[in-house]
Image (cartoon, rainbow, N blue to C red; front, side):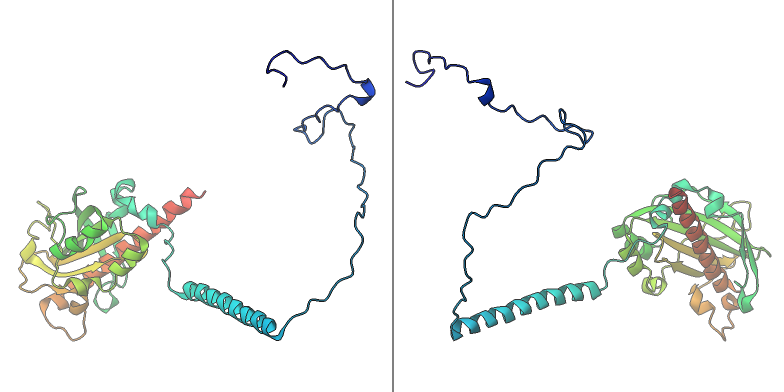
Length: 310
């Protein structure tokens, strides 16, 4: 009978102390020593023991067919390896997803993180921004509260373009030049576009949108009091590749005169133009202020990114 199945098993006599089973080895010490062993202890070196006789190597006999098969397998293996490497090299040479520019993520948060005077300075200098590289200085006269993306603050074509990318918020302000003869409404459209979508968005944006003139922002008791849709003369729209933002600008005469056919800035800036819009430099105003706001946004975003890493 097995012990425990019926009657209790008879007790065995105790083994002599000399033949007591060895106790379990002590647990390793967390400090790199084994308890119970003196410091510097090392187990005795092992002695190699040869338990078989050394055999004489026997040369393998290969037939011609087997040799050819081995060669074919080797060639096939090299071909597969080469094909795999070629695929890796081709994949590496393909234009991949562009790395996110420095400050890109930070730029997307500027609409609620940066003060209004940072995004729209009270005075904005434009050296070389006017016709014939004349200097321009713009003074802010109107600031609108941040707004949701809607036809009230965005041109129809631009709204339809940025909505699939995730249109976050729109900020707008209106400036006038040093002579108070022109007024310019500028807009910052913040989106959730990634770097790839933003790069595609910015390629010839104004031309792709056609006659998609941004809305004007008037201001009571200012020189922009009469600046409305019929007073819009020239405009520009830009989406820089390194910022998830679309920058817009639309210019007009401060005296309230109407313009029948607004012109994109590049057309109004073309040489040889003699119409009032071109001669007054309204194309220069729209494009010049757009470029300077882009630079300002870029500097602010990069500075914010650098402060995070300090």
